[in-house]
Amino acid sequence: MKLGFIGTGNMAGAIMGGIIKNKIFRPEEIIGADISPAGRERAKETYGICVTDNNREAAEKSEVLILSVKPQYYADAIAEIRDCISDDQLIITIAPGKTLAWLEEQFGKAVKIVRTMPNTPALVGEGMTAACVNQYVAEEEKEYALKILSSFGKVEIVAEHLIDAVVAVSGSSPAYVFMFIEAMADAAVAEGMPRPQAYQFAAQAVYGSAKMVLETGKHPGELKDMVCSPAGTTIEAVRVLEEKGFRSAVIEAMKACADVSRNM
Image (cartoon, helix red, strand yellow):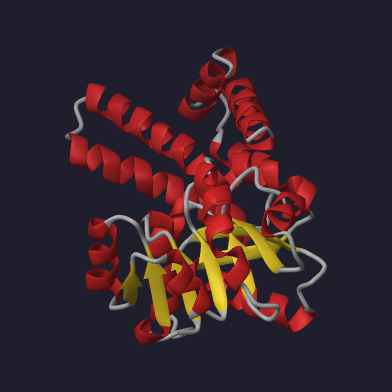
């Protein structure tokens, strides 16, 4: 096996799907370990990978190992596999709050670690992932990790002290965006639009607006001003959002999110 997963949940599945679709690895080159029989069977049926209930088996058979369990299970998972991790294996982590220093301490030896923070849009190939590496990862190994991570969206190297900001701005933010879409759809329904159509209009508006930011390179404020005609409908909506503390609510929510990440 070339690639292993400990944990085969939604994020692991998104990564597997991107990797297989982009032919980074073949399904038979991937092994996933999960204590849940249902989780193992789902991964096997969906992606055609090899599965096991033994974390050590996944670790021993992998050149690159992705730890995709919840943060609270990281210490136990690492304790189970650390004595079978070799010097040339690459470990990729996706847990908020688990720093490179903490991870190295858990392994208790020199281990090549790539710490990452992906997000759930990876499920549709539009993820945004931040990555940082420890001192044992060579340049070519870092590039190899980035190739894997870019198979399900975009990836950027960031300084480790920015990971908590990444959690707030991309890791957790799909939830805020989904709430925004839901709220806009609710308002459209209140105006008489059928709900399925309301979701379609709201989601496409968010998608298209995000694409404009990414592709035009214009400042979001400039793009907002382009929509706001004098004495028009949009500027009135913007006025109400400002009156209700829209920007402040988003900023405070993200600060709270980063604080929780920082203290996990």
